[in-house]
Image (cartoon, rainbow, N blue to C red; front, side):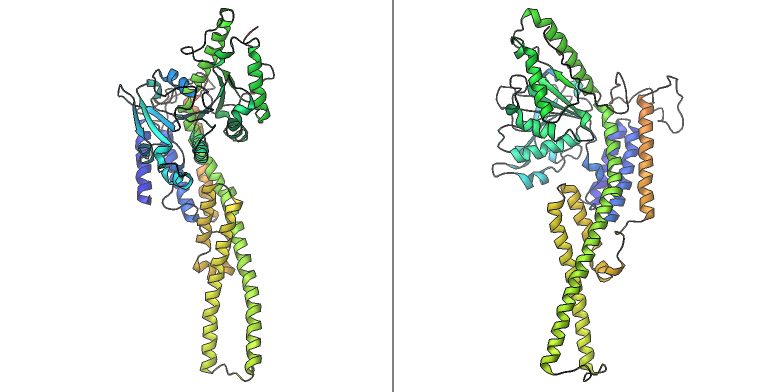
Length: 518
């Protein structure tokens, strides 16, 4: 992808956001452009990359969990369409991206439909898949598929159904794609099977969807659901199932969060009359809360995108640049250290040469063509050796980065930036090398300007979704125009939350358990 293709993609994104009448996110795209320019100057991004294309601009909900946990059944019930295959065993080993279509019939499209369309969050994902696929895989179509559905609940958002994490023949790639999906999602529904709440049955889910996520800054977007609770209705002690499940989560490190217990009334087991009312009441209450969260992803998407802009901006100043400065210093030390050793060996070689030939310094004339020629050859050889040493030092440091930095994006960016900072010209004048290329006080001011814009975007979002004073506000020149959504009228694609807040708080898990049976 060239810089022209990146610009074309960003313009299409702006067109899409304008169609949504989302003026705030349109301005955020401009801030991403400014951030890209800074990263280009540092050498951290190539001209084929953009921070804006590393995130999903669509509101996204992902559904993850173990096999037979009822993920697909839940989605079918939510959408009101039999879209996903269901069963007690693995019936679909692909990630399924579900989006809205005005057609009355559902359609299934291959993974290339996602890989080749820049509007979706899996654009050119085939490049990553090519690096991790196994011999049994057949490219992107082996991992992804796109399904369309006419449900109005899908308008303006994307749902992603995942294969289970157990007994997966394409385990490595599945986990990599799951991590990619989690990073892009505004809401992550993690399903567990009430029929198998013991830790052994959900070991992988506990590791990858609990232990690996509790330290995330966006951990509030994870919702944990114990599904198919109807199976416990005939148990003598159904609350023990919930207790066992919560103990397993606590052992994985999760001591806070919102947990739900649900079942699908359309396919549930017969529930004894004496507990049926209580089961239904609890299930309906939890289902409503889950669906309310799903309806709020449009609002949460805007905050997520702005938050990622802030995160990327701070990362450049506080992480990327210091790491690059450290790498440059390591490079200089390696070059100087190697040249000192080379100089010592060269001096020994010259002394040995004089000793064996019987030539002395007194017997040499600086005006002699032979002497001048020898000096010239030595000077050129010294420059060549110096450049060679500089390149070798760069390659050695880059090789070490593979073990020091696990994040592929950061490692590749630092590799690119280090090469830019250790090129031929900077190697020749290595003693003058100080700050990284493109880094200056003016560049810092530009980053601070982006952060200032972030605060402005958040305030504008808050004005749109909140009004603490309760007073009616009048449009001002800095607010959206009449053709755009006003602060008291949310954008059509962003549902109005019943209790709007700027960010989604992380609820605390209480030590008492709601019992299903008294």
